[in-house]
Image (spheres, rainbow, N blue to C red):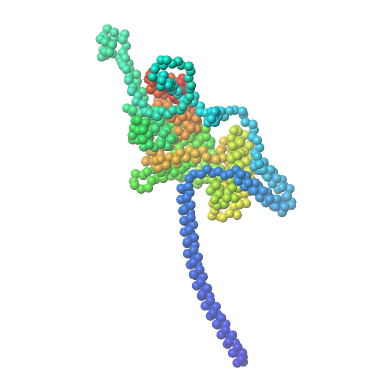
Length: 605
């Protein structure tokens, strides 16, 4: 190699080494920048995570303090959203059909059939079979007076007549005046309720013919005479002053009217006779002992049926220590047209639920809580899910994705419209009607779910709603093959609402005993409402009769069988149920209104 070539080669090597050194320097700088950028990204990610946690916490606080609002959406919005869903899905089906000419005809027929069925449902549901021309139960014509105000039915109110005369007539005692007519008008008057002191006087008698020669006077008798005296009326406990009517009034006031005992004490003071809350509480213990057996019999009968609905809510119990209150759980079980039974538990898990449902084999209507899965796996229940829960998920997504949420709510609304039209049908007819009308709607909903799920953000509320509906697809369709199933579980939620509202009055239960009392009394009160009974009158009669009733026939005292039981009471049992003051009051106050209890007893007699 010549000297010139060596020089050129040396220069090129030096240039390459310089470039390499520069590249290494640039690489170190870029790596340093990369580390700095990664540190910045990590800090930003931490800040983002903290912000998301704050948003989640604020959202939870907002939802906790948010007042209950009706889950309602304007019908016009639902109709527009539903029309958009049908049109978009039909366009997708047409595009898919055009791609495959070999299967164009079958798919076109299928799409046309589905579209026609859904369009028929949405544009106007087919008329249901003609309903029998029966007047609605307890329906009365709406009467109005000459001023357009609703006219009240006063026939059930006791009447008190008051005669009003001019002062001039009263001053002269009617002298110099002649009555030529009268004008009448009615007013509704409130007479404060009050407790009455029932002073029982049991007079002693002796037969005159046995001791006629030994009687010194009408008020004296020989010491060996056989006296006759009326038995003292029964009470809940020996030497108790509370009559069953007073106890029933206190129970219904607390567990149905949500008036705690301290408020009842205040009301009694205002009415003129103060009853301490401790006294009222002492009345509840023997009442619970009498009534709990009836509720147990109701639960056994409910579990012997093939369908149950259930739900649960939290119930706070004050602990013995000064720590935070303990969170218990209250379950409600509904056998429709039969019984409502409440049960409490410390844990909300499948083990406790399985213990409560021991002996039940059938369909359980509930939500998608995980506590039902072990029971389904064990073959103990067939789970049916609630469409109202599905709708609630989409309702919560209205704020974040209104268009999609409206589409889902509109489709689900069609199912509820169909159910309202089918509620008068029998089981077999209802299954057929549901299959014919709800089937196409459910297919439309499935197509919509499959289309929208890949498009939404996995962290969004609408994705949670779609996932919930997809995961419970089979359980949500149980109602199609079972005419005895409801499509929603709103009846259970409505029954638990009383406890939630009551927490505004008493915040928590003082002990587990209070929760036991609540479960027993609410079971009977809610069952009375289910069967159209007055809870206060029912409890009054049962508290008198239950101590004399066979423990093997306690189910006959449940609200479901109460009317039939009253119709078969013997004269001795009627005498037990009849209030102890009825005869005494009739003697000096014949114009007192007959109570509902007395009316039932007289009808049975």
